[in-house]
Amino acid sequence: MASQDKPLVHIVRATGYSLKGLKAALTLEPAFRIELALFVILAPLGIWLGNSGMERALLVGCLILVLIIELLNSALEAAVDRTGMEFNTLAGRAKDLGSAAVMVAHANVIVMWGLVLLG
Image (tube, rainbow, N blue to C red):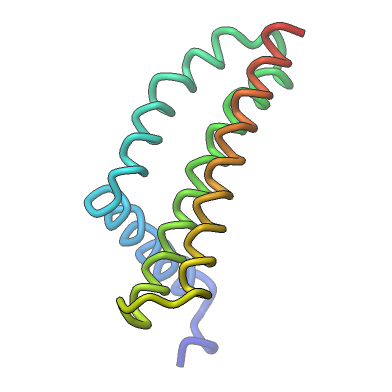
């Protein structure tokens, strides 16, 4: 039983599931690949441009947040698509809300970088 796994066994299994999810995102989600490419470019730039540990954390942290929200949005879309491909108002709303969350995360990057670098 999974509930009786030893802690190390649980951590190893959870890590495997997480890596499987990252592999799925990399192979099946073009938006995640684009955002990851931007992260690879912008994170080092944020570390270089930040004048303090706090500034570097803000510049890189908001980029990580975009990746997290994109992963959650992709998971939501996969779950909604699993229920059926026919049009459903609630399914459409769920997908639109997930997309809006990603858009707000992108806006957060712009605001954070603007405030840190221009402030």
